[in-house]
Amino acid sequence: MQKGLVFNIQRYSIHDGGGIRTIVFLKGCPLACPWCSNPESRKAVEPVQWIKNGKKEIIGEWKTSAEVIDEVLKDEIFYRTSGGGVTLSGGEVLMQHLFAKEVLSELHYLGINTAIETTGCFEKERLESLLPFTDEVLFDIKILDMTQAKKVIGINLKNMKENFEMALQFPGVKVTPRIPLIPDYTATEENIEMIINYFKNFDIKEVHLLPFHQYGSSKYDYLGWEYLLKDMETLSDTEIDQIKKRFESHGFYANIEGLE
Ligand code: SF4
Image 1: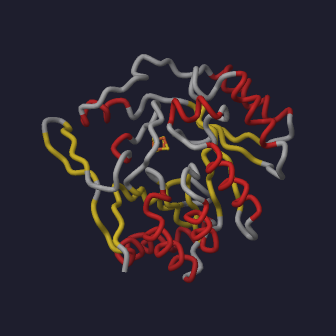
Image 2: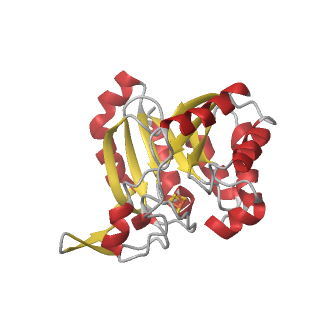
Image 3: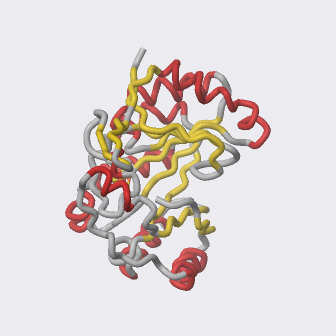
């Protein structure tokens, strides 16, 4: 049985998929988005220590897939009555793909709706192994200029696009693209234009827009890491609405969602 490193299990969420959900956050992410609001999830699949209110805390706990299944099944009644289920998030789920596969396949067998959130930043075999047990993929699309994507967040866009397009074609899987709206990074005229033009190649009906926020800021202090966007202002409601309308004018239903 696989063990996975989990840094949070959040119950009763109404984000990250339909209905009432439990979100299982897996530790580890190879990317370096400067706006990341879960910096404790980044880097290797190993526990990290932070100091919060003067106390040392270890972030990340190794759990077997059976332990995670037991935990999430406590809310099975809510999933069944609300059309909800379980979402594996991160970090980057594909960092722990073998563990994720075990959890997803068991939930799938039990008839629980499953979702994953990913940036698709690995070779496509990893995502491909999860899709037979996944009902929805919340696919993060951030920066579509190849050079900028590599420079700012460290992602290989070729991998990301291969994964995205494979998921879109995979039978029985709903793919919902999610775009973090980060001033000067992703929410620029050019980037939004590139994303819309890219999406027009596919049968995409709905996108999620995730406006920038500063809620993760104190976590950088706990970790003793520099937070480059500490003075970045959030977008105004008008700016968010303008971006939403741009997507809608091209026929996409744009949902302002939870926050990245
Ligand atoms: S992909 Fe997500 S978890 Fe990884 S650095 Fe970016 S925002 Fe953070």
